[in-house]
Length: 257
Image 1 (cartoon, rainbow, N blue to C red):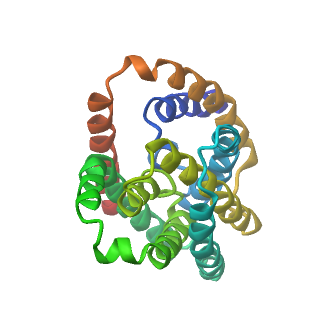
Image 2 (spheres, rainbow, N blue to C red):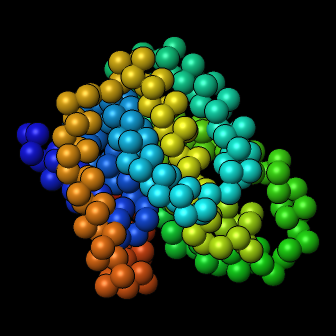
Image 3 (cartoon, rainbow, N blue to C red):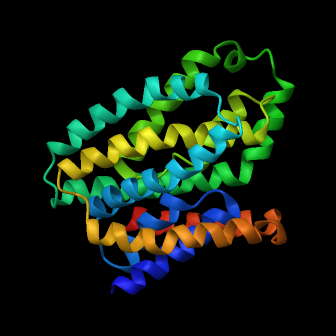
């Protein structure tokens, strides 16, 4: 079975390299629906998987000056306390109980549907924000950014989904004049402490499968490299609708699961 995990890691890694999104959005539901991994274990393992893979991306973005550390700090000011509270609540639920399984599956499904919307409507959100520069959102960027961080903290801690496409979409809406590469760099940098803290919490609760994590990383790291190198040859307008459709179908399946 290990080689199937590694193959899955490679495929998901390649999709991440191609589109910039899809890590937790595809890996966690793949583990739950295809391999029958318990949702709590799938989420905990995927969080640490994300922390490792995104740490490398943060180093690259940081060296190129693509990280707005002020924005990262504001997001973390919201996400870290929210993550701590969410993990505390999860720790007091029976790990293998139907309540925990149902909660994680429901939140995972909702997060996937939101992620699909973020992928489809990202450019429209940015255009709207640019044409409404004096709106309430633009006048209150700081508290709203902290609130976005808190929302991501809750979603990511429960489902492992949201740190990528949802975070990027929110930042495009809040900071429409910021270059796309800085938006992505800042989102990736914030995802590292978020997934690391959330993943560590799940580890302490016994929800991480280290053998599974190793198998996924063996496949995903070369997958990301391959995907990144061929991304310029595959039209974004084709990839994103396909990915969004997949997420909608998987999200609906998990909600009904």
